[in-house]
Length: 310
Length: 244
Image (cartoon, rainbow over all chains, first blue to last red; front, side, top):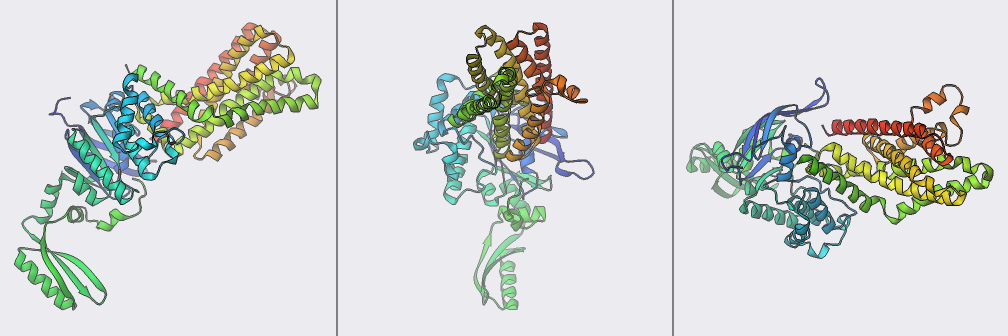
């Protein structure tokens, strides 16, 4: 594949579940591009259509209309060839509980046609890399949640894919395991693997993604670099963050102003009117959360709602 | 190129299922106990009639062993998402399902072949008849395993798979000539029995073991092949619809 070609190119992809009159329009004519070698984050609240998008791009679900090219190949015509060159980490760690960690990796290598002579070596390398060497003979069903997740990622890498799909990679993981997985995603990007990830964690997208698309109710609201999305919020204005303290406790508020001085004045006026003590005032850069709120009209709390599919 | 990926995937799916699920000691012992208990029960009840029941008992063993575990395996993997993991690999959906059917079929064939060998030794059935009997079992377990696949993709939960499988299997046992010959069934039941694969499995085994017409047996095998194809196509279509 030429580097000039997008790793993923989606045009007008649409998917409805159920009947036309009472079904759910999960994805509504979305369009975006993923460049080779980048981490692309599809960010949206639960039920926005992120998982449906990933299912369509990996061939699990057939789109109703629209077209997509993955690694330069037509999704509708060349799915088997696409599957050989992509790795997929589903939201659920879904390997085989009866097989050991190593047997699971060998089985995946067999399915993907990895030559017999290198299967064992690759499996051992991945077990070592994911710090699972001591659990190589342990059944998948007996591993901890973090280890299951790590092995699921390892299984997606056994055939050395050019493009890795990660559906909510850190969802349900504890802080330590989530941090380890994020570090791994960064390392894979450094190795040249293109990564398409969905997430409903704003900080995760901000930290990992080179570019982000915001998906709400099946539609892409905005797609840009993280810096580009943030700049759409600031747009010549200054953001001022004020930390208050009052009888009820402490609070934090962000205000937008034409410049720093007017922002500080507005913050102090507000504190006086509300009878609060100002702890600190800082001028800050807008976060991806600010951009998300601005561009989608949703609150950040929507992203924290209990995961219900999507 | 793609067909090679699919065939490879099919075979590895079947191999994985046999290792991970089917050929575990509890399943093998259950599979052996089931026909053993049935034969013992009939021996105690009516020893003289037992030889006539051999084709039915062996066919019933094939039916239960080829459908029981498979219906559980596919439904379980659908619940855990492990079935989708297979579909992410470079193989077609029919190839993946064929791997599942092959695994169930080989388990059913192994268990029913052991039962066949047991009754052959016990009743002095000529050993030269066994290859043809194994051929009949091969076609029978293919049809039954496809039935197991259809059952498993039609339900959501493992217990539902067992309930639906039993709702199909038990009427078949009474209609398909296992205990009562077809010609002795009342009303339209003989015609209904002709719509069920177990009928042809029992007939094919009966013809082999009692020296019946080769042509008639070939027709029974053809009927089982048609059942296999129809059930497999239906299971594939339902699974694809569920994925979409």
